[in-house]
Image 1 (spheres, rainbow, N blue to C red):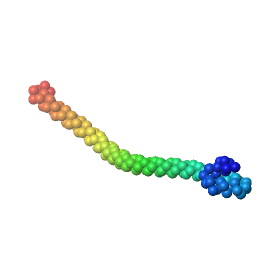
Image 2: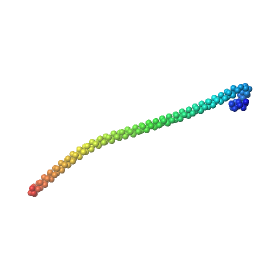
Image 3: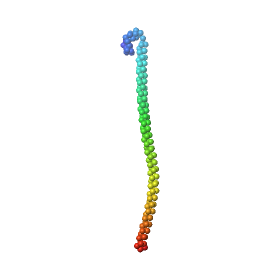
Image 4: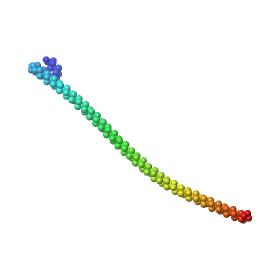
Length: 144
């Protein structure tokens, strides 16, 4: 019986073993079995709590990574906003330059037409002068 008691309760002192043998009660073994069952339940509960704790830690880590991703995304969006603002400003400047260029082309067309008209007028005046000179020369030479 001493050996059985040691199996059920390995850390029992000699006095506890003697008392259990003297009491001749099977309740000691039942209590020991219950205590060992409670110990197993407690260990199982502890493992479950540790597993849940580890899962919560993983979730926390994932949330922190997600937070960092959002921060990085915000930085990228902010940086791209600056780039987009610069691109928009450059587009507006290009549009203004195109408008100015179109006005200058219109002015150049008007000036070119005017210059062409003046060239024709100058050519006609020159031809009239040449004709007058030829007529004067021919009249003075007596050809006409």
